[in-house]
Length: 563
Image (cartoon, rainbow, N blue to C red; front, top):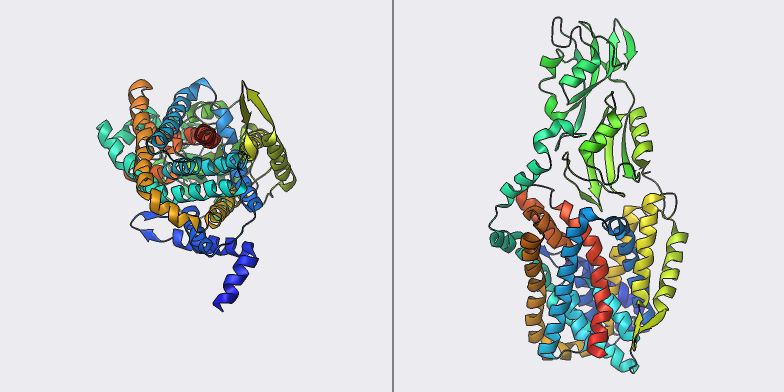
């Protein structure tokens, strides 16, 4: 049975790839405290293990899987990448540039100290920075070197070993640094600092926002009390006094009166109202007693996710948008959440929205649809991926990557990975403005990215083969020490640069550090410890910029070390 299995793996390498993925994902899920290895590292380690039996995996596997991953990264980052190229986000862009430049410098410094080859050096950067894209673009560059196939395979094997050795500390070290060490170096308490930033963003002026933070919408029916606060006043007056409610329907003497803000309320009118959760308690005082009245609550409502594409509102704060869309009448809509690159933004008056942000609204149907027409478009729940556009984008990107030019005597080319990343960025940006072209739902983006990257890691491990054990034995300790330096030095430099040169608020800075190293786990740690989503403001811009800059580092490392 064992001989049959080994023979099947050698004869059909695709079986080995899927086996490494399956076992690697299962291992990656194992939780040790708050840490887990992750799918990619797990698949690479299982690939290294299975690869010891000597499996010849076609190089094309690696290229195809990496193209899926890097395209999804580009598509997701496109709107934020191009949207961040403005004066409002210049500081965050500079922070990413400084961190990535320091990372590249520290990688090359460790190479100079320990005299690694191009494979070890690229793998060191990918593992210590937990950015597998470096390994993908470096692998493409290695394949372009004027070397014998055996020599190129050895460099790829060394790259897998270096990644495996440095990845563990790269993940844990960054989480500990951003979540624990950095706040102490800055001398801040995360919870207090988060409250301070929220006040700066307008939490003390909740009535100026579209929705009050951290609440959700409920529907209630109340009878207007005789001689109560609402008796004898129009709907507009009542809503002006209480920002947490809107009157959607009035039932008077058994007859339905649809919303009219000039309608004067009378005793015994039954009001169907939208209210924010925290406003439910005072409704008895503002209007009158609550009752169960289906007729007053049967007004049409809708919940919808709206993708912001309008140039009129992009770049404006929630407070400014509210003033633009309300006019003299309250829209009857409340914001449930706003997400950017799948991360929730703080619902504060001075939170700035950008193209591609997804606004979740609840309200009366006609108001939600009217707002959607002004803000952008309603994201359908069942829309499908535009496979033709995306595969064509990968074709164009691959061809673009094959083009080369010269700067003096130095040959310059993007490589297939870089070309596909560029087309992904452009198509993602274009889709954020013209959603009818190039649709790629978040679930499909995740599948492209997660499967592509995990499969790429598995193939890299399988290709490393028996040579990996020897390389790990000879270079394990130098790689481990180098990984510590490459993991900690870039965020340390960026921390002080961001705080004392750029003057960033600590919470935005910590989120930016996590984003600049494309590591969501460390940002989630900050959110958990601070109890605030404000770090997302710094994370998304730096994440988009660094995804591009770190991917570009792969070919640079190979050229400098092997050139």
